[in-house]
Image 1 (cartoon, protein in one colour):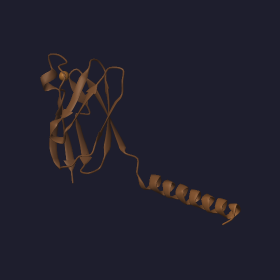
Image 2 (cartoon, rainbow, N blue to C red):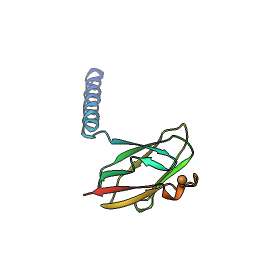
Image 3 (cartoon, protein in one colour):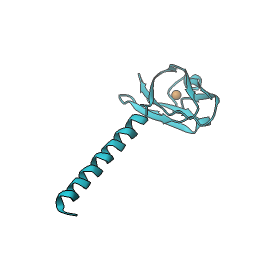
Image 4 (cartoon, protein in one colour):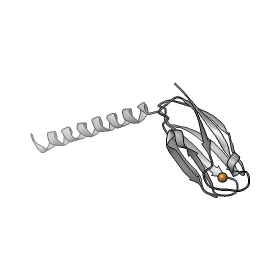
Length: 121
Ligand SMILES: [Cu+2]
């Protein structure tokens, strides 16, 4: 193989590689982003519906103090820090209705700061 044909083989391999990469990106749909705002003493929205096995990004902000977000049934939690956007990726692995709650004491209504996630098949 002379150097010209070697260069051609490398160029072809490069373009095949690019093509495979592009196909891979196109096959992966963007993950759904659900924005949730926390404030004393609730979440908006306080009910969300997800699909089993489908990844979503929960995007949290807090309007006042440091809050938590915990779904023990799904094994996920996050701190929601004032002035920051917190992203939490969830891939629900089971169907059902699960309670989420604030797990960082934030004041007199803290115990009632809850919501639900329904995961459908
Ligand atoms: Cu709290």
